[in-house]
Length: 60
Image: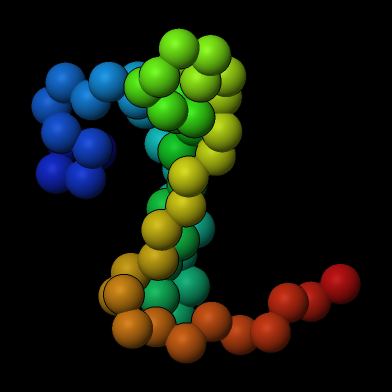
């Protein structure tokens, strides 16, 4: 996580998870919503690699 969030990120990333599919991968992490007062509640951040991947339509 250090290359993405920095070695000492103020957002306190944790609970890293990855879902790997043919042609792309999804990265999920729980972190603080922000660094301002009152933004310490958890949110889920997501990323996709490669950045130009075309995601398939959602399935039910």
